[in-house]
Length: 278
Image (tube, rainbow, N blue to C red; front, side):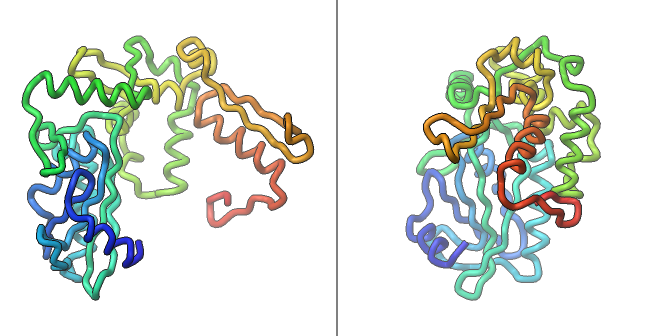
């Protein structure tokens, strides 16, 4: 992030998607109220080291890495944020001060912190208390995020054999110390939001996202018959195509099929950096 980009955020000031917090040598006590509210609303940016009057206070240079690590750990702790949502803060420099920048995307799930659901307005974070308000959040998210649809009768027997371990291997190749790698499959599904409980309908089970990631092809197509990935190459016949790959298997397996299709047509061959194919 450039100084100009930081400056634009500061000039814009706090609002629906921007929050400043002082954090000289520790995390603010209410930081996860804002994180929860951003996840539940439209996402946003949190910058630690700036006060409400836009003064650049900074974060103690000797504590900044510790604060970042603590923040990441807590975002992956279901006692602090439920369901968890792993966030990665970044240290940035501005006017010779250290700041911490956290991008919080909008989530497909409804999150709680300290047992309370928060939402966001231009005036800041506020607690959602009534059943009607909670229902509105679920309805809003369900209209945007179809992957949250629960399939109560979907179970692990409908998943391709060995596919979950393959997914973990992909995670391990990119982030060897990812906290999800040591979880049992049951906890892995829950913390990743692939097995959820809808507190409105009380339905519990695997989601559409789990089906698309891990499901056997025939199970996916029985539930989502319109699902497919259509890869086309147009070089000579630009009005139609020169080569085509239609993929209807789960997304983990589809990745390998598509990478092979791409490597067949790219002029530059793939190469290895460590264990990663580039």
